[in-house]
Length: 107
Image (tube, rainbow, N blue to C red; front, side):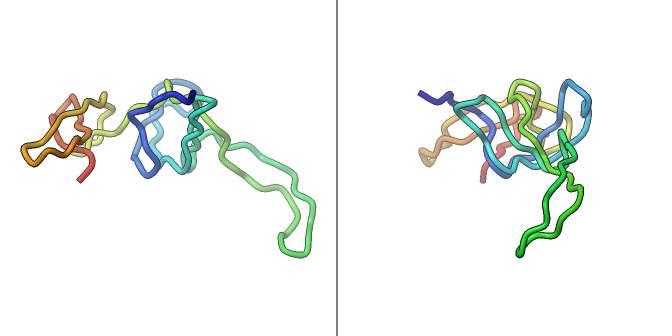
């Protein structure tokens, strides 16, 4: 069974550890079975690509997955890393909120 994460595609995150520590990016894809996520502009590697009819050849940079535990969501109020909690609003919706500021993350 795949793990349950508090981070989702489209979230703005801050890298907490590793070579990209302190950098920010948007989650492009969450790989639940591997406990990893692909973040725009983070954990870049160079790959040699052979030329095909549809794609140009050469050396390309691409994002590789990073461990979910090394990411923290950016607080919507000030952009600092924060933890995520859940709460139920008066209208019955369950939403995520930033524990640092109390700001609701999803609309």
